[in-house]
Length: 232
Image 1 (cartoon, one colour):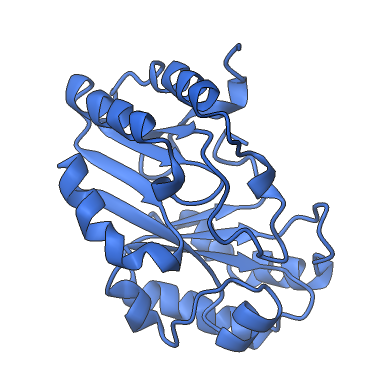
Image 2 (image 1 turned 90 degrees about the horizontal axis):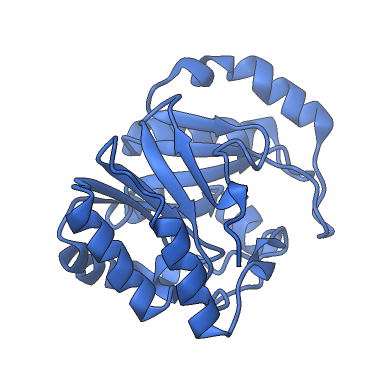
């Protein structure tokens, strides 16, 4: 299998790093109402291991920082792929790793940090700190009630803005929580996909004007298009 161009990239706007989009077993939750990203997974372990290794082989280590993402959580990657990531860390002198995980794995983060033996920035798809919208509209299956709870385990929340049903007040609260409780974060501007959840164009225009200053904030990455990280 050839290596899709969009599975390896370099991020040089903020927090310079290499990024790899790997394939994993199906997301353990897989029921978020807005997500069709979970289609990029599989059950053929040998094929996934082979593809993932070919992607990881492109890592040069030039920044000393690597981000690994997949359609779910890092805990759903094949064991051999995790071994291969460990090997890349050692051979390419990686000193910082970005991983992604669902809230359900929060008690497993410490073990993964210990395994990789380099500092890990753990991202989490919070989407919003409004628990009612998060659970009853987005169906995230993440029952935390406050940003402080999230910050006990995770380093970098991913927020989503511009969804029909969201309000300006909800978004303002989310950005405030991001800046108040976390050193890093990502804001994804919602794009329509194959799910019934739809984008609110007026809300997006308001956000991009009201929060234009985030584009210059070194601690927050704003993704206007889903491929802004160069993968996907």
